[in-house]
Image (tube, rainbow, N blue to C red; front, side, top):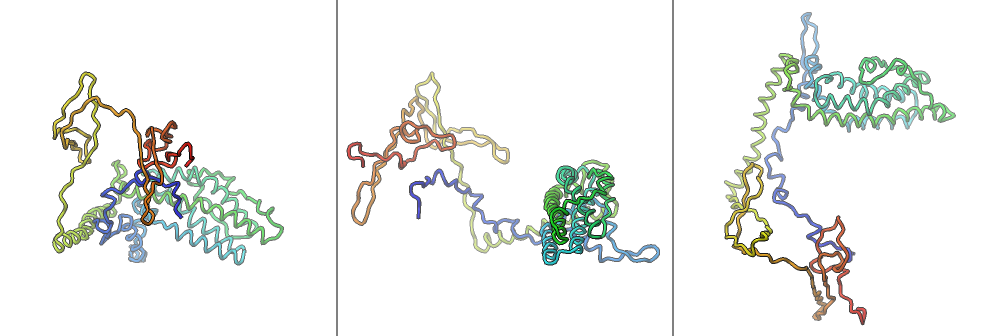
Length: 411
């Protein structure tokens, strides 16, 4: 049922839709790309392809081409950008489900090694490879590790050491984290053991579940950081290929510089290929359907003129141009008067509203009510002022509190 007492005037409620907002996405050139691969996608393609191409050493031993790309900052940033947080979260949830079915030390070890090698060590490797590059992703990683991950990592180490001591899981080598100064770890923290889980149950099963949950509770903090870093890496993709400083440009190895030059040239071909969808639409609508573009419609503006004190009236001729600001092309915008107007000192003394609401039921028409506002500058039409968060305009067709009540008959 409609609440008629709290209806909002459409001019106050609906902001409207501009012409640009009404354009269908399907009619835009960028809606359907023939080759929609980004620069990160292309670099990731080379990384995955390198695993399947043989490289023959001088002694005829066979390896692959992965080492050519592993220490390159653009390839590292592409790897960060392509990080799949949903897949990592799904795998974490799967391990949790397995542990809930049968809590054991093997399930605890599975969680610890997944947390370290797939999450903590991955973040540490990302930071070491982009450290000193002066890219946004490097600053973001360092700040997030110091502010968000310092305490969780300290807890993770102490919980893991407890699992090694009491459940004999395979220990983790913390030397990689210790060698990276951004974690700010000292030797004592590497051997710390948190045994608070022992007080959370009187059976081995309960204590195992408590320790598992303590470690699992740390996972969301790492995943959130990896998501934020992935966004920062997308911004750093282009600057990593063409750094502003010469000393960073010289760090690109010759074989990678050739590859990056090829990718920059390939992007021109890619953009030309993706422009075919717009050319096809233009051909279909303009040549096949013979649709014609509408003529340009000039903008309109309502202008209020005020006359100077020394004049009683002043004539403004039709076509007089009034200067506005500049458009998006930095060209001056002018508005011209549609008609001539004589500006004088006449002003509005007061504003009032009167509305007779005629209702028709069947064939009978009656006056439902008389709505009036002796002072349309007031919220109640009489004395109360408008609040700051309200449109300072009285309802044209009358508001509920402006309905006239006969003082004698009270109707």
